[in-house]
Length: 403
Image (tube, rainbow, N blue to C red):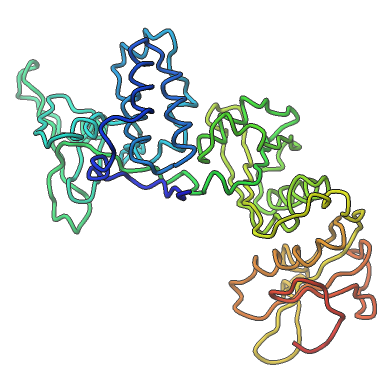
């Protein structure tokens, strides 16, 4: 299975695809019946199996390149969620100035033979060297206003590439895909689960969650069983540390339920999406990659009951013994290095690795001390250490002063 990079697609790659395939024949038949939505669904299912397959991308772009009239009068018009699915990122064209996006038909025109394009009212123009692109509105904004030309004089659209390496090269056609930088590259089959949280007391529906998830992750509605939808207290998603804390708590809950393999925090990414594509509220999307270690089927039944533990991250300076990260003015612990959590004891080594990785920028050896119970408001003693998670360790060790 290829891992999609969501990069721009190159014209030469179209020609590696066979002239006729089952997918092409199916989609052509559906388009002849005006069934645009079903046609794009078939293309997306093909891309879900192989995100970088040239034929799947070509067929999808063929559907998206249908005329606006054909799409509007179709008995099955395309949905917004379909049109901006993350699997279509490689064939998306984005304006380099305003980030406006569209699907250019020029790539389809160049499939068989090179043709010369001289558009009179282009939706955009592009540098043929680096693919710096400007949409129609940005091109017009750069054109100086003339007070001498006749009102019915033809408009001349022209602009130059803004990249220094191109030496002021003029923009022209064809306008080819540029890719989408906001899509998270990930192998769809490597996704173990996706936690979806919306800011506010109302839990999003599966359809609302899918609209957001499929826009930024290479998934389709068939992947709905992967979603774990939750709600959040209003304002919780406004702070990065609060989002991380919420995500970690939800992942631990799913681990205790046996839905996710242990140490899921280290395999996750946090994506904060402002106001969502539908403007219905901020979202936190947490995709989790599958663990490389196989979890036995009985794992959900053998997980211990969760306990409460206090954690303390320590750093080993170049000189001296282990030290804690504190604000020199207030004496408070650095955010994320000290706190309490609820987790089964067997998950503590994995949690220690997650904390250690978060502070790898320190460039020093790190370890995590665990204490039983919530000791955040009490004095800590080395005699009370439950165990130590060391860098790269898979189990807790007894307390020691040395590195």
